[in-house]
Length: 122
Image (cartoon, rainbow, N blue to C red; front, side, top):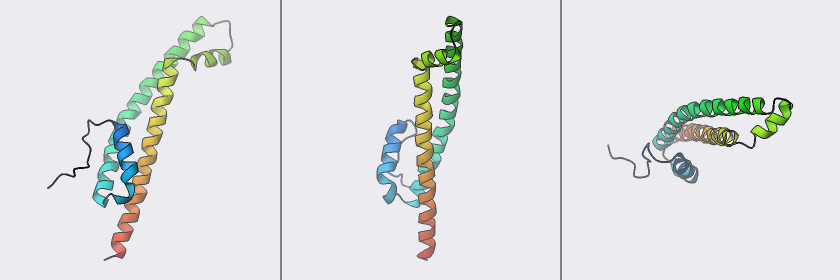
């Protein structure tokens, strides 16, 4: 079976995969749509683990700040914690996960449309 020259290797950066899929959504074949949806779903599993780790790192940072600012309110500590690398990393990973999730949903919708179109043409 000939490999699709536009298909990305699993080691490619997810941003490249997302950009490619988004730019080619309307011209992908049903097989390509399915493969990209599966590839991105696999990435989502990895990203779920990254999100959990980032959430834990942020929690640990928040707890450390809570000790430093023991005489302050939780709201004050929350504001301080939002200025940390841990908070930024957590939010960045959450945003990427959401973007991938939206692309997977769009691919599923596209696959449904292509499937209905192919049934209508036969």
